Image (cartoon, rainbow, N blue to C red; front, side, top):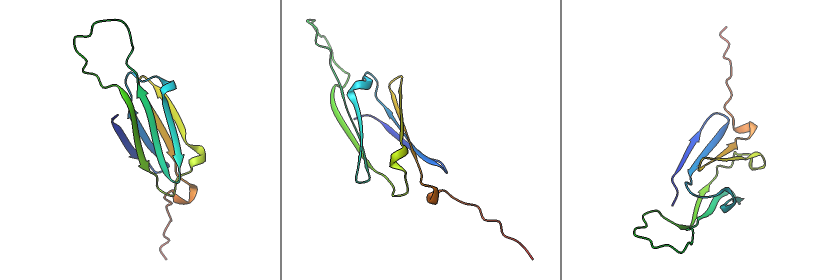
Length: 105
């Protein structure tokens, strides 16, 4: 199960997932009915070799998160670099905080 950090700014949510040893081609990101799903597989290389110890986790994984309704799913960005998947999920304009000036008379 990969580790995930979720942060929020005024304009977006940022999801960072640690996927060491997982190739970009083995990672899939889906959004369906307000649920973000990250699927993938860390494959064990099959070589004819004698293994003395296997401590690393291998196999398939799935992580799912419910997204707030105020995000723009059409503009989600994804970047995969050095085993870290970073998703930027922008907020809709109406959800961004606005500052209103108060006039004193």
